[in-house]
Length: 115
Length: 114
Image (cartoon, rainbow over all chains, first blue to last red; front, side, top):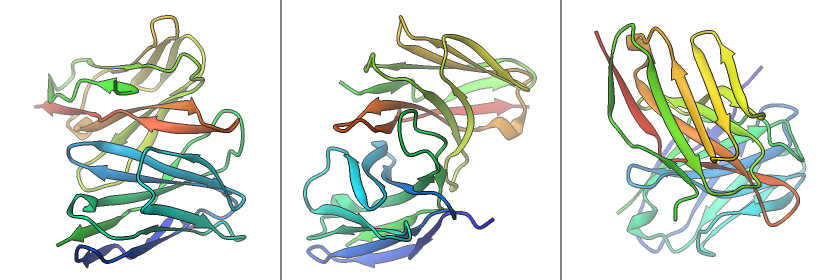
């Protein structure tokens, strides 16, 4: 069974540009969550999607957005990039849709460097 | 105030000893609690989850939950060098909808010395 696939794995952008990251969840998983990981802040919750709807959102500015498609694949977008957006962006998928959230299965991440 | 607090470490434990990792959380409505392990350069992977007060054992790992004190811990018995990693405590929180979101602590770095 294929795991969570994230693309691209590495990318370099300059300030002011925008970036789109993609995540394909494990087959059958309908929930996709996105996290930003930095050495100083750890894993920070960005948002979670289920059945094409954003169910939860973390405390990030509006420059961070996402969406989910009917096949459960998800994308996140960061506009007007800032140096502080340099981080590892992790996507995680889950089987559980409601109530107690189940286990998260993480992809290998997309490492974004903003110059 | 951070929602999930962990001591960042590093915590150094001799091989064969018991490693004790602690976590506190702020949302009394949290219902499920997780311990993830993250090796350097790798993604987090779930090692334990616990929903009810008390202890839950799985091999060398024991998770302990005390909802009244809002406290979760992980004990690793017979620590091995392969246990050296960052351990992330995670808690589900009520989101703005009826669904939940999982919030992570910043992790405790564990080092097992031979």
